[in-house]
Image 1 (spheres, rainbow, N blue to C red):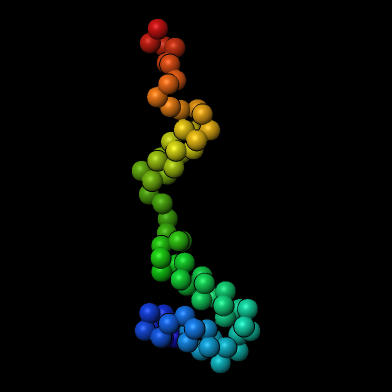
Image 2: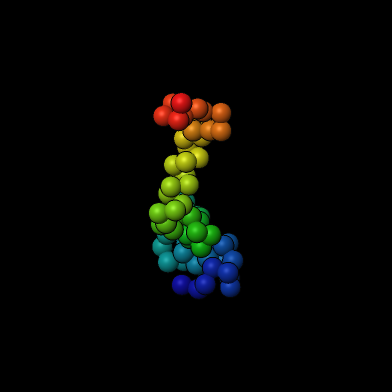
Length: 73
């Protein structure tokens, strides 16, 4: 199969159709390929996982600047 950026997503979908894929299947495969190329399926590193968790804590009110630590009192 040709490189996505050399032929474009439309030509890639048409090529998939020529190989027997339905229109919906071809569009989904091209969408998955685009997401993969843009890094959508990469594994997060440990620091990235910690940062996401810290953001979740802040977003849900479990962590923030205004929270007093009772152990320091």
